[in-house]
Length: 161
Image (cartoon, rainbow, N blue to C red; front, side):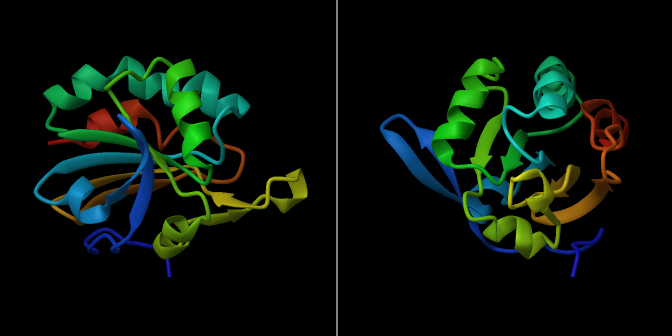
């Protein structure tokens, strides 16, 4: 079942790059007591993700924080090394937490997986964004296939209190 507004975010873990390499980050650490803007892309280094989705959040990171976001996080069904490299290439610095969901387990727990096997990409995540306040989803924006708009940084800005 797909996560809905008012639902508590499911428990899980992500891989992130720390000072000494890959580390685990729990949902409690990410979402507990914080307002988080989480956006998901079908794949790091893919055209729309690299040209529009990630850059929009990098560009608007300060404004998102000014509007109440404690953390901005990018999720993809990619490994931690790819997410780290993509973050460096995209100039995220410390503006965005790059979350690797290497096996797609968390994406499936959200009910937002995407069958991209027709493109040779296997199971990925849909393009979406969530605003999560202390572990509870307050906004969800899932893109129709092949589209980009409702999961943008600009939409998140409009939705933050």
